[in-house]
Length: 140
Image 1 (cartoon, one colour):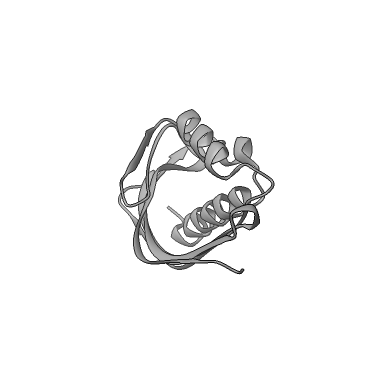
Image 2 (tube, rainbow, N blue to C red; image 1 turned 45 degrees about the horizontal axis):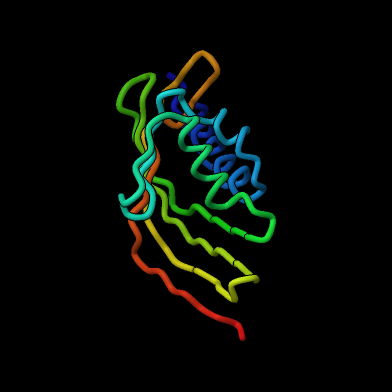
């Protein structure tokens, strides 16, 4: 296994996850996942099974053009568990702005991911985060 190239592919996969999430390209985001992917959002309060369920939930929660999101993943720690599986931890800084509700949510969290190498390349098999800090602000 060419670890450097495989690592770069996983990094690009997660970067694409954040990009497609913030651009509201939910169908493309779903293509970054295995069909049976799972997700654990909101500190485990929202558990989702299957890429279709994840895409549906994200598009319902964040799909409105009146909601602006910003997600930054930093300090990736990627470990290969076999030639076709890996785990990853990412430090997240995020921001959600909802002008109509006079609300801005900002915070930090740690993502815990699992990746599987498929015929199409590396895909997210599980993603989820646990919050470290969350702040709610109003601008009025």
